[in-house]
Amino acid sequence: MQCATQAVPDRFSGAGLIKNIRHIYGIAFFLMPYYLILNMKLSSYFSMVSFLQKLVLVLGCIALAVACNKSDFVPNGGSNEKLNGSVKLYDDLGNPIISNGMTVSLQGTSYSTVTDSSGKYSFKNLPFGTYTLVFTKQGFGTYKLDTFRFADNFSDTPVLAPEKILGAMATTSISNLSITIDTLADTIKIISTVQPPANADTARGIRLFFGSTQAVSATAYNSFSGLYKAKQATGSARFSYADFYSLGYRTGDSVYVKSYGESLVPNDYIDISTGKSVFPNVNNNTVAAVGFVLP
Image 1 (spheres, rainbow, N blue to C red):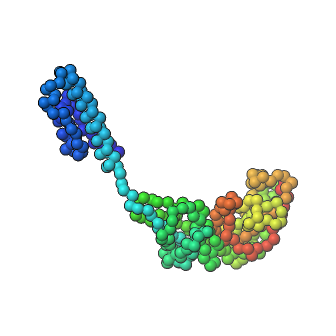
Image 2: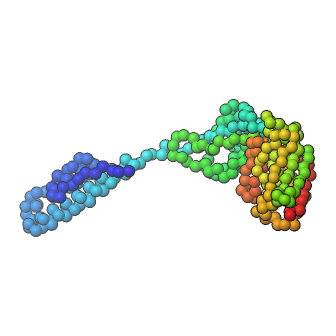
Image 3: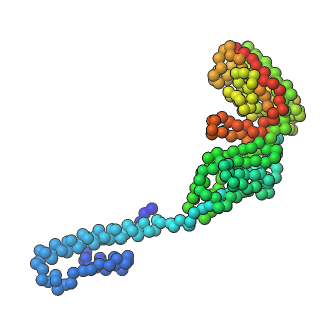
């Protein structure tokens, strides 16, 4: 910010400048009476004038600086203890639904609230701090927003949590899983049969999890695929050998795959205590893992 300045002439009257400063900024000065000055030696008089000029110049600069700082200062309207947020809810096929009835709670506390018909929620009289927001509703996988810092925003408006787009748990199940290896193309094709069958108008989500043993699952895995869609009775995903090499597997390693029906709005998040992704919307109605030896 630039502050308005007042030019000071090279030659000026100390008394005049003092009067101006006193008038503008309310700063009082006490000047030596003229009859004392008459009795002073001329050299002492000029020394005194020089001293006064320097003093007035310094005080004038200080006064101007104080005025600038005052114009920059905005009072804090008091602490803010209200946190607002919102959600948008979808079914597992990606269709929007009414966003009411989702419980939002603060993990480890007694604070809890419920979203209204527009998906909005609010916490009042909430102490400042860092919270984990937990979103729950019947038929939806639990979602967590970790380490949200609720701090004073120095205004009277509520602090806003980021809007979350959340989906229902998958209604898609997996009834069969098979793997084919194309040694000419150096690719591995993984085929999942979905129930109910998908079609061009109603796609269904699938997610794959990879591990080194048949115990691989959506919670115990080494790696996972992105969400992909089946638009017919089966959904297939094709991977190159190099894709598995990049995951740390080597030629001759056993790789196991488990397939799950997944919501098209998956609610996945990272658990900061483990560093692993959580997939709360997968449908656990699936088949056993299938393995292959990586060429």
